[in-house]
Length: 216
Ligand SMILES: [Zn+2]
Image (cartoon, rainbow, N blue to C red; front, side):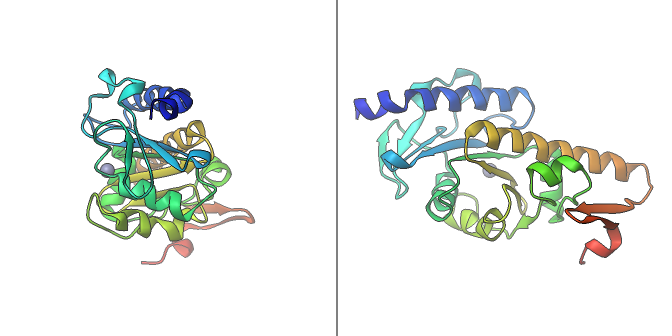
């Protein structure tokens, strides 16, 4: 499988550098979170390894595997590889996934509340509000299955009681989306902490009162 790794080495290097950027940006703590890319021409997913310190990670540590779990290069993929595989298997336009437990967005995931669309970047880059996928046990394919109804429409969602998933056609796009999700969560949280109610959400047509846009 040496030739496969040689072919995908630039992708593996990009995954390592992006993971380290995400770690330095505070999107991931410890060894939590995971990133992947899918190379359809090779039927191959490249994903961060299980439980490895991001600062020590090298391109050779990235695991190359098929979506059925067959490892082609590397030792042990992230424990959440089934979620990534499920998304790639069902959403062919997705070529990169970033999964984090970024704190502000994950606070909304714990509350199982969507992050309302109150910022223009959310409309432009995230397709509007950031919705919450139903809970599934960590490590199961169901985590990915439960994201599909949202990720077929938008490039980001929250995982109930868990974290954040963002997608892209490139890893850079998926990473930028993960930054926007955390930024949106932080800004909404700060706005709500003033005690003033959020007056409106926005959509393509304009804005509408926030209380009309939420269903409790
Ligand atoms: Zn996770």
